[in-house]
Image 1 (cartoon, rainbow, N blue to C red):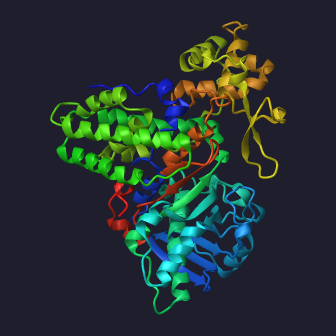
Image 2: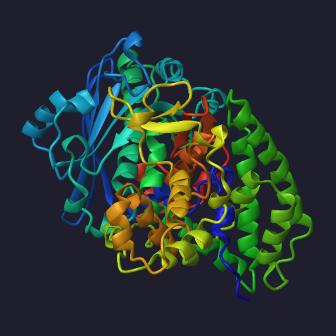
Length: 553
């Protein structure tokens, strides 16, 4: 049976992209698989009784070494902020290429805590900072110092001891440029070094809390139970700075979505389904119900999505337990057809993630396709004609061409770069000043403008000649010809309309990172958790790859 890939005009709508969940293709999970045989070591723990100082961890294999250098700093409660305008954090981190010398550590001690204001070098690969979840952190210290373990239910409501507010790489602030490391085999996949940093930061939070508790009460203190540690992750506060990435990297976006859609297609094409594989899927679904019950949020928008997910998940499990016939040929295809008719987008896309669990032979080769050399496709085919371009627009952007940008609600917002932190922001065109500084992120509007402009041109006119007089649309002409080759390269929606929910764009990217517990604090920023349930560094070689669905216990 030949199953068609899902239509990009269906998949690439923001409401659906904002319903994606982590899967075996997500970067933090594939990172753990790829680095499970590396040697982990804590190389230095130099903290005072209050937990301030330096800690260093490393991953080593053959001649390659990556070292995370952690600087724990003393700040007041008034200085602690998750906002991007913050200037001080409880801890700051950099992933170092190799083994740092004493001179390196001293240099970085003067710069890493300053983050953007500091000076990094090509030896530093990634940069981050994080703040304590003070209520939980202090509570855990208090419990451990008195010789008892913290309450698991209380911890489950938060899910982490620290949350990061940014993770930088690829040449920002003087860090190593991508070209220096892009050919390294072990980090070929997307965001490998960023995932390594966050994973090792998680271990730092456990070591720090244990150290403070021991210093506070040396005779009575106990270490945090490994089962509790395993069920804690690293939190993250993410705002609009992440949203433009998926617009600015169409080829990379295509490769991420294409891998996911190809996995779904190949699973639906499985002719003979094995009972043990179905049992694993059912187990993951059942365990995930317990985890979803621990998702907490004050967002009405997200509460509705969570409640709908819970309701639909019951239907999905009932289908698996009473109607799913694994002995029937192509039973996964029947499952998908049923799910599309009976489940909402949130649960349908959750199911797409879960049914990948038994099929490493399908997902592992696809992980190798998720990077992109975007420069290869940067050149505009100037020898093509207006007729070629018109055909591409009418075929690939038919839904977008129906949007009327003369209507106020379809043109309401604009994206700009903030002056103080050079971060992307969104504003109301009809209420706020600054639309003259608008960033070229309104692709749907620009596609419509391009289509209107070429309507007056001859079909035989060469694209190169057209661009000589229409240079303002060069960026969108390039995108159209990229989308011609790569079907999932474009969001098939309006990114400046009144109905825009920016967190859909954030969730899309975060799902590929491997985040869970989406907790929107507004329509423009949210908190998430990463590596919750993941094996500890000392457990990587023997870990269960399906840990993400394990219940909190």
